[in-house]
Image (cartoon, rainbow, N blue to C red; front, side, top):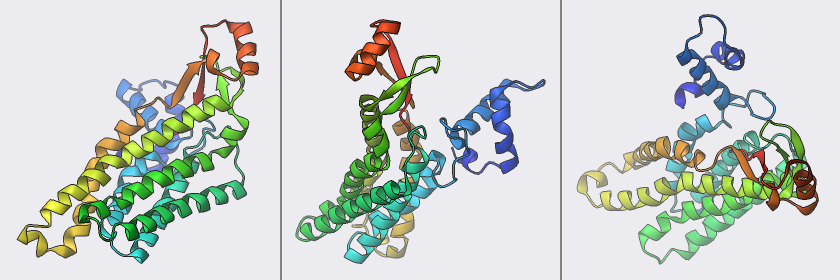
Length: 285
């Protein structure tokens, strides 16, 4: 994953042509590597190169730094506000980068999605932070995860509201466009929300338990200045496994039975292809 993130630009620009053809002398290993680079760096709908920070391959270095800081600086309201804002800014960019690009979104809609998600995260984090002042210390450490989960439930649907309002493009197995479906959009976006929360959950739930116990030891009490870096590195360990695991929960090229689509679209497809046909769409990441 990291190799695709920091791959030199010249090779990255060459990978699309190599992935789409087989030049003489190309080994199977080179072909697979080019395909991996292409899938990680270029958008499946547009074929355009995605911005570096928004790629899924940046989730480990970016996510570990931000999540580690959220878990470390959870005690004061200013720190909670700042790191939740940083996290939602990062998430907004990731959500926009990995959206279904066949459904355009306006700058105003992007702004509304960003403000709404950030406000949700801040309200959840600050509210729970104040509410848990008298709760056991471990409960307060879980507040960042609650805020992240709540914001994901808002940020992703808001950033992809055009798909919910107007439907997502669905195709047959050969890529031929059949129409637009709101139900397909709802299914795809729901799967993305589940994947994102799953990606963050182990590190943000288990790590506070580990740190709570480790901080009881005298050697940990002597190196309080290292608690932040330790949490960043430990979050990184979780994300190395959880990013690919969460992304693989549901295929990016999602499918559903035509019988579950909107009546008008379903009838048009069934009349042409029959009852057993499935439609396909890019659910995004």
